[in-house]
Image 1 (spheres, one colour):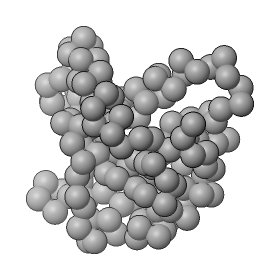
Image 2 (tube, one colour; image 1 turned 180 degrees about the vertical axis):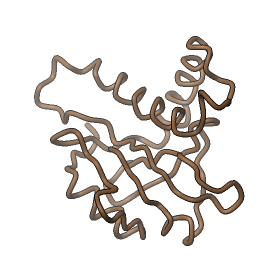
Image 3 (cartoon, one colour; image 1 turned 180 degrees about the horizontal axis):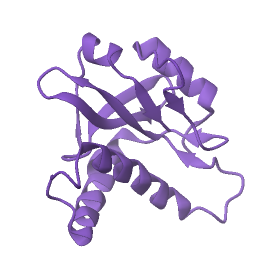
Length: 149
């Protein structure tokens, strides 16, 4: 089983990575979460998610389907996959993928996903339009102003 963590653990991990969300910009809906396997995200989930986008006919970016919608659906899809374990009450309630809003150095305000992987101490950022890991600069990390887990 993946590692279990709480919202408090998530805040600590984000703080260590330089993410300091202030003034109510962090929301956690579940009692506890599980960390994600980075290899599974890249090799299994990415393919499933992209097929899901196709089936929903929302793969094309536009004013009604933009970055925050992609980020919300990416995190929601993780939860859909995890809900298949609903008959296991011993497992954590939520998946370790969060929506993350920040200021991108080239395009301005943007939404991506922040994922807690392998060990709660490791965070990766994922661009939900491509499912690729995204490297954020220190300035971009400091610009994060909203995280919903």
